Length: 149
Ligand SMILES: [Cu+2]
Image 1 (tube, rainbow, N blue to C red):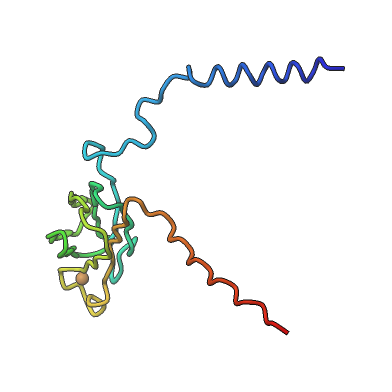
Image 2 (image 1 turned 135 degrees about the vertical axis):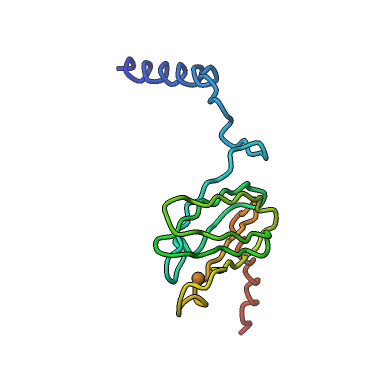
């Protein structure tokens, strides 16, 4: 009985033919450019931590930090990108825009003394390389020659 498999084959052909005419997405999935919207990252400062304390981005990416305090006055200082801003008490966020133009791990601190744990109030901006392919495993050493008896 060949009929069902013939039908399946026909369906498969139809699908393959139909794929190329699928309407394109508004933006190519892998489009990436300076014109893209900045990556918005909400960060909360509170005695004596940052949430999140580690902020991963991709090199070249435009970043918009939206900073709020959960208690009193804090401030952010990220020297690598010349960022230093007070984060005043209240609900109004402080917005900082920059381009993460160098890969690496860049610490940031609280710039406003906020109490005994102020010096421990640290975070890190992690700027990952764009082609962050997994590091290839080292090639295994060749097997030693078989012992000769
Ligand atoms: Cu502080």
